[in-house]
Amino acid sequence: MKNFSYVLLSAVFLLTSCEKDDSITSADVTAAVNSALAAAQIPTTAQITAAVTTAVNAAMASGTDIDQAIADALAAQNAAPQTETVGIEGGVTIIETSATWTNDRIWIMNGKVVVKDGGVLNIQAGTIIKAGSGTGADASVLVIAKGGQINAIGSATAPIIFTDIGDNISYADNGVSPNRVPSDMGLWGSVVVLGNASVGEDGGTDDIEGIADGFSWTTYGGSNDTESSGRIEYVSIRHSGQTLTGDNELQGLTLGGVGSGTVVNHVEIIGSQDDGIEIFGGSVNVSNLVIHFNGDDAIDLDEGYKGTISNAVIALTASTDGAFEIDGTEDSSGTIDGQYTLENVTVYGSATQEDTSQYGNWKSDATGLNQNIVYKSFNSGTTIAAIDADTYGGLGTATAAGSNFFNNFDFVTTDALSTIMPAAIIDGATWAETVTSQVASSGADESVLGWTLFVSN
Image (cartoon, rainbow, N blue to C red; front, side, top):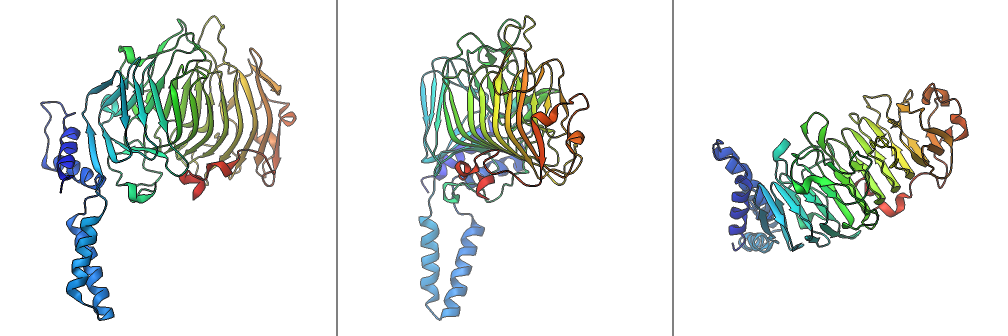
């Protein structure tokens, strides 16, 4: 029972984020303790009873010693792995130097955890992090502030998992939750990384959305386009996304002004209530990305983003707004215009889609290069929402200032290309085609994404 104290401690941590005048009911306490018990893998009475009943029935059927069967079942329950659970207290927890989250326990993150300028957060491969269930301004968020670093380095066989406190997943589950499904959305905040790279915003800086403004650790943007905010590799972010107010939201993964020295590679985002990934300016490159079951847009680019997103699989759901929402700069001088690259992407539609314009929306003077994108399993009648005529450059193979180019789009559909394209686009056939089945070697290379829940299933 040495782990029971950790369970009780984590339950206390979960409850400390409540305001002093809030009414905490017995149900609140029970829910918190039950979540911590599940996270710590301590067998419940029901689990012990079920194990013993199964052993007795097996002994009776085989004619073996019932007393010994009971003893063996109890011993097995007592020997089951009981991972220590460590709680991080609510409110705002600041990491100013160095901290390491290890894979020998489950970490419960309650409130805001902020890695400030000069701080480093290391997360070992295979670590499970569960976030508290606060909403809006109280949502649990991991924030890597400007000048801070994260080194979350998992592997294909031991990915790092961010999920919610109600997820009963343990280290014994091999990455698959016993109770969560992809449609469980919006149960905590987000992972947010902020940097000093240039952003297309007047003044060159901005406050990240989804978190109350006015803190030094909520601003992003600068002039160091090659800066590193660390590494995020083989990380699965599940059941996140919150709305603070109106268009002020948290996504699965948010990157604001992040430099190209940062490594973001092999990331899975499942069940984000808002966007899968949203990038505000900066020059960070993202590769080997899977986004499954998001509520708003899968990939959202803003404020003159000029990095590359490569090899991505997107699986939309009925409520998804669109595969892409891509905006241009908000720098009124036009000095920073973005010039992103989006390439090697496969997008799966949903038979129950509610929005008919899910192929993408290129708006607000978006500038970049979009190439080798395949759309599959969409309903007939699905369209591109818009392509801004101000920067539309038609067929192209490289980025250029002030232009948005397209190349090698395949739509697996019986629809005519004229049905898919916005009316103003009359040369779509130079860069897009409809096909009856996916062409070999087009879209994403899914063979490198087998570690994710979506591709593995």
